[in-house]
Structure formats: C-alpha cells, structure tokens
Image: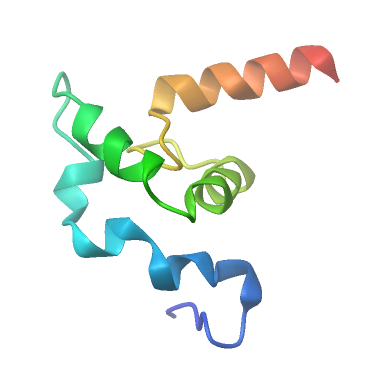
Amino acid sequence: MPINTATDPAFAWQETALCAQAGPEFFFPAPGSSTREAKQLCNACEGRQACLEYALDNDERFGVWGGLSEKERERLRRVGREQA
C-alpha cells in the first residue's frame, strides 16, 4: 500500500525530494560502483535530513539515503549506540 504523503506529514519530504527526479539505480548502484553523484544530489535536497532519519528509523540497509551510503549509516548507528 503506497504512503499518502498528503495525509501523513512524516512523509511530506518525499513530495519535493530530488531523488524522485532520478531513477532508483542512481541511489542503488551496483556493488563497487560510485555513490558520489547520488550523494551530491542528496546534499542539494531540502529533504535530506528527513530522508536520513527515515532510513535510520526503518533500518534501510541498501542504497544512498539522506546522503549516506550503507556503510556510513551503519557507522552512524554504531556511534549513536556507543554514546547512548
């Protein structure tokens, strides 16, 4: 069931997200491929922080979310656990 961003403000960032203008392969590159272009697009997006929070809250394990790769998000989770 798709998320209705009009009725769920927690997902409103998806309406203006720059990733909606690029294909999924851009944010889910083949193993060993560069994520640089996806990260650059994320860094220009006003929904970047909300996207990153979504990925962390929902344990997204693949792709670039909120400007961070899988490894970078995992590192952020580890640091957060160590500080808690």
